[in-house]
Length: 343
Image (cartoon, rainbow, N blue to C red; front, side, top):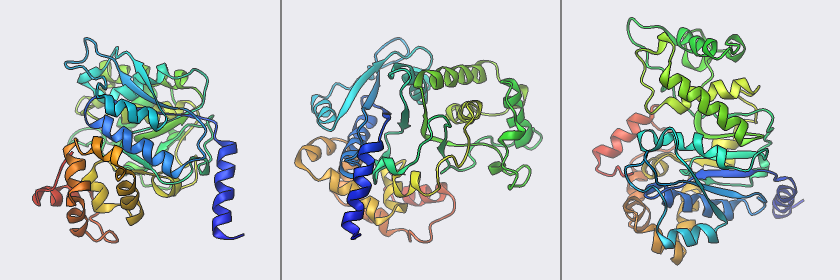
């Protein structure tokens, strides 16, 4: 079979097997522009996706100092044109004080009992999502993560004691969560995810437990967490516990698909230009090029300068993508020192 025919067969299979909804969170400001990039990349790279795409939007209320709703008519029109459905939800617990909590509270607004995949808006879809063999009875999340939590103190408890206290708090089997191929007190031994993507069979089941665990950790943490910051890490502290409680874990989908062949969690545009593949950069610039997209996206300063005015290429020229600094912070610092950091 020729390469073009093989690609067509993959896309045909994708149309037949896609059976889940997508949720992203959108609100006024940076996230609404990221929503457009996500949706445009989905339509360009995964035409076989047959599910619904919900843009969950917090409604204005007492937990928001400013109205978080998307009010830009051009943005709303493009969201609809690209297949996104605005899904309002009420912020009852987090709001402006912890906006990462949007991904938790919004789950309860999705259709109950329907498979879902959550993506952070700072994600590009690179290929058909049906290439990822999601098992919606076994949740998982992104393993593209650094050891950002917990941060150990000199005389405080270690990784094992901190994580075990959380598993004990919720009646979970701590030993079953460990990666015994990793050494004791090395952060990778303990279940930890990037919360930029996760999935399950029912958003209400997952969302209620995610909310219960997050609120319990926030309001009544184990003693072992007394020296630990939960801002902005609360969602990533609770997430592995939720996933483990539903029988999921690490490596429930083959490596190299999420945060690889099929998706790219780019985090910030300067980081995208610094470290992602040439094909990712080309996709970003391709989906940003149509006049209707450009008219809207150029009103957001980082996209205007990095994509349309070429400053992204200057960032890219600063790094050898085959030999990047090991720590993300080193990349950030180098970009900041050059005066090219924007978000």
